[in-house]
Length: 620
Image (tube, rainbow, N blue to C red; front, side, top):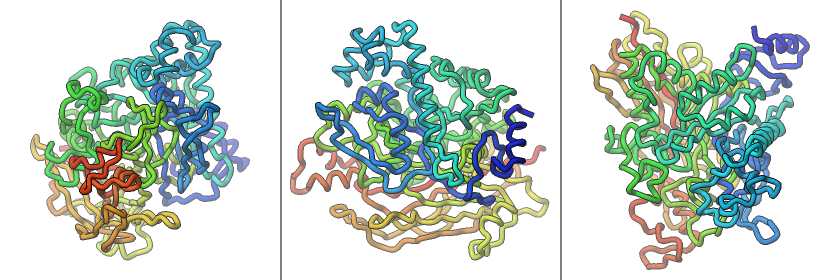
């Protein structure tokens, strides 16, 4: 037994930690007053950048990790640009606080901001640092290079930054019985040679026991090297340190996110990848990564928030980018995982889905379409000179949220939810979705008050594997329930339109897919694009029990849920309307030309995507 576990047993006997539940407890904290063995959905943002990320600093961001957590908990913050006295000229505030968040600054540039912003740094007066302070747009493409010239300053400031991030997370973490907010210590791994074709990962630690700054600030050349570092620096037998690694923006990876650095895949690699990378970010500020219409699928709803290029530099230098490829998307990777399991015995892509923002303003969870003013990053310098017009490229979006089903709002409970993949993503709304799979759910389950209890007792939740089928089984049965975002006073959410189950399976060597509407129906709801008022019918809740009629015992398969709202105005439409844009009348203020670009929609259907439930055939 680990040293920490022994201490927790003693503390539990004294009543100083919560009673044991479905997850291991590794930290000392008061018991949560709100504890539900059937679990509660908690909404958060696990991808947040502050001034410690060089691409945030060079666009004028000055919010610290403490500020990002204050914002996540519902406080107002000031944003760039700043006047000559350093006073912010904009402000932002969430309508509803988040339940959890993680600041994930780019670890490779931890020391760079300090080096160029502090006169006592040994490289303060170097050319690169002068550029960083005076011409931040130019500095974005090379900022941080000075760190290697700084001798001892680099290590000192890296350690200082990492310590500040830990302290900010600890201060924000509600260890009282109220359990009002949970923070995670984390960082983003961003190898320098992967700045064009994205392989970036967010690393989140379970508790306050984390590695020293030398680990996050290391220049790991590959994801596999990152896992090696975490094996050595975190997952030791004498430590309660643990971590999950979450790939993001596979849509901009030029097909590399779901490959191995050293091919071919083998069982050992597949096992290790599935162990560390249990979740993937399917929606964020720089686009959605579920699927692409016409690229391996005929699903018409795969056109949601798709970027027209396949790497980070595509919007600046199209010559460096190709068209998005099917393997950039999670649905394709999920299917490839099913196929690989048949040959390897292990599925390397047995991952769940979450959303987050990737904000570079420190504005955790700022996802409302009607108030979106950009998140920055990837070369967008909204803080240097606030542009006249749209504050974000029109192809970007406000990002999404991560939702975790957990017994309580604590680090251990939420981390356990991430590990078992009982998680889902939304494109911003706080839609509640439950999804269970089993072999014997009654058709009347939706009419009972024990939906979650029966779902757990007779099957597995999202993120799980179906138990082996009983002898008389004709096919798996899935139960799904969705509740409309409750909204806030004066700002109602859109009603729900329908629930879909997406099935992938392997037929011989081919991966096939099916999209089934199981509740609700295609809506005739409308949106007035001039006022953004919504009309038409919709649902406050939807529920269905669906049995797969085409199930084959010997075919690997997975099933996940997509929940759709009625159409509503996209963020760019809100911004264009506020500016008085009238494309038909030719009234287009400077900076708002993209408002009339026919390649981008004026309305969207917000949605949620669950983690899959997998079926693995019995061994022959």
